[in-house]
Length: 329
Ligand SMILES: [Zn+2]
Ligand SMILES: [Zn+2]
Image 1 (cartoon, rainbow, N blue to C red):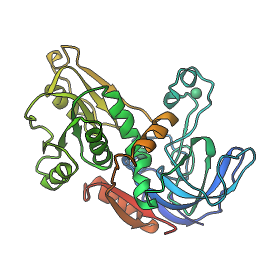
Image 2: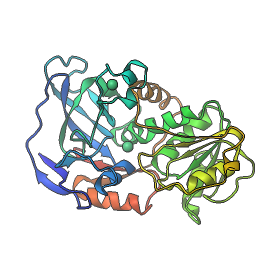
Image 3: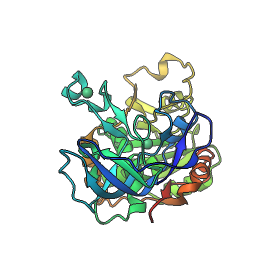
Image 4: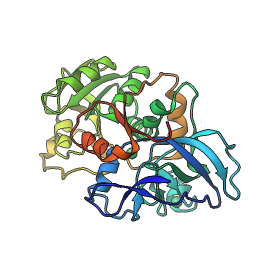
């Protein structure tokens, strides 16, 4: 089969011919239809996440059809369409798993990082971590829900019942979460790179009542800020526009250093926290809500062989929404 593989950090992915993987216990073999491109993929290729399996097939927003099942894999029928997310395996026994925080599992393995992912014609995945997908989505538009959507949803949950939500970095996650937040009756304020009027207009079209530059002040204080851009300087910038008791949620897996800031920005019970990975519950909840909203995803298709171009376009902010590799379709 054809796969785009990473051999070493900071090298382009290479189109290679590799054997079709064989599903082991609890795994299914999936014929990949599409795989969306995540900012985390950039951090893996760029070496900021520095312990990948190598060589590696990246990609963790996979939509495809089940081909066959390994031993003790009974959950899906051959031909069934499923989605594969970032969380690829947990031990179900460590103190985090037992406490409902399997996203922090000490033995977790991640799709497209510890395990080969979806920038390929076939992949295998542990059936316990896959999701059925609503029929109202075609493959292309379902793919971005699987990480941008559900890790964004976990970040939104971390904002509690905050009414006025700031979204910093209006890319794949924010364009989905803006719609969910509006559906929940919250108010959305969008922050983009300075002068990116195109993304600001995109944010307004998805229900943001205000959109502006990342260092600008919104018309009123916010109750929560979700930061999707990998820019540490946004943390004090967001604290500055929060009401007392508000929370800054850092939703990315990597961020540049956070500059020092005066304690008064944090004073009055403001909080800073991160979001790591996802639990299966996040996925199940979000994938039930998404078709009800209904969340519409803005997708930019690329052929598998142009994965490096998709990553470069993402790194340089050349599109709003999500890049998706079209593999079987
Ligand atoms: Zn991701
Ligand atoms: Zn565990």
